[in-house]
Length: 217
Length: 217
Image (tube, rainbow over all chains, first blue to last red):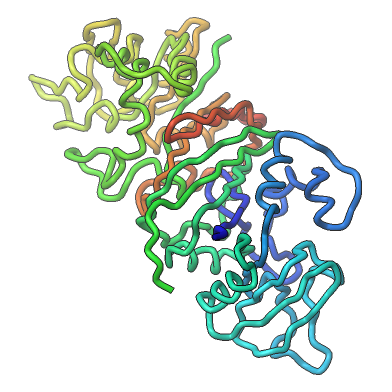
């Protein structure tokens, strides 16, 4: 049986995105600083279809997160915002023609739409009956492999609160954003267990297991 | 020249104390959970004058924080709240007759009072002209050794914002408090460098250096 997990980069003051998020700046003001540790990595570049890059203490963590993912769940804004309800020439997301998921992706949205098959094994399925349904479909599609919840914050919080997350990775970045979107806003009463912590250049990776599972979706 | 530093335990959602702090419950509801990793440690027990205890990956971190401290700065609530202005039988703080500081402690308060000398090398000095003055006096008393800012949150935030902190240790605890007092509320624009991260039982210790020093006190 596969696990359900997510990863997220957070600032020291607990933000996973800066303030004033917009389509032009989906990570908010300063939010890109949360991910700068990842950009030089070979493991990150490879997932984007790029060659070269660095290997360091972050590498096994990034590889572990990406390994054995059989399906992905994400919110509609993470798919790509765009001009919704889908028109005749529907928006194909902002992940390009070869998205870095290489697995079926279940997008939680209010707007029905047929599947969108792109290159490299990524097919977006649009789910209109909520995140619980998207997770169920993802588990079925993963067929024993793992389910990765890609975000955004709202989806992660819903999944945490619903008790359907088995484990998660925080990438703790030495940055203060001062404002923005908090991962753990209004998420309470999870019993957590620290599994591992890894010091890497400009980031500390900590893996947690959720001990108290109270499925509610 | 000694450094000025602090250490603080924080929940995953960024709280250094739970909600509803009071004299009876100075750490707030659930706040004691932030420190449970420390209580079994020999290094922690020794500082309280207790014997026995565990040695684990936290030990060298706790020892490093406690090492070469020549003076301490703290806020009045951390000294012990109590019935202020000081009367004829003044409150001696809640640290007991042999406090775990073993160094001069400069308490930022509005209420003048003479020094209070206790056992084990701890003398409390009461400073009425602000945290900047307390830090200056502490540096002088430390005489080349380090200055430890003990807290509370308000004092730590003032020192961070004033740019007088050289380094700090976060003890990141796998607990969600949901509400309480945030360390980094309204602290902005510090340039930080991650120095080291240590995985230990039920806690991850991360040491940061403040790169941008803008002394303003």
